[in-house]
Amino acid sequence: MSEPMVRSKLDGSVLLTKRQVEMVGLLACGHNIREAAVALGLSVHTAAGHSKAVMRRLGAKNRAELVLLAVRHGFIRVPTHPVS
Image (cartoon, one colour):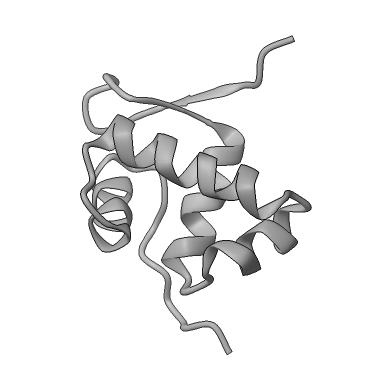
């Protein structure tokens, strides 16, 4: 059974899994990979894999660009508060 996919709201050309969108959302809020892994109940290795897969799909060179492109594609909204 395949995981549900979320389509880019920008042009529909990029598909991410729901879990990948959750991962990017946590990174956008300031969590590191380890913290995001714990929040999602994943291993650090799996969480890093999700992050790298999204970076490839969006063409991001680093995490800051990953978050920017995820916002532009409508996968996430800009966080309104930092991690405490």
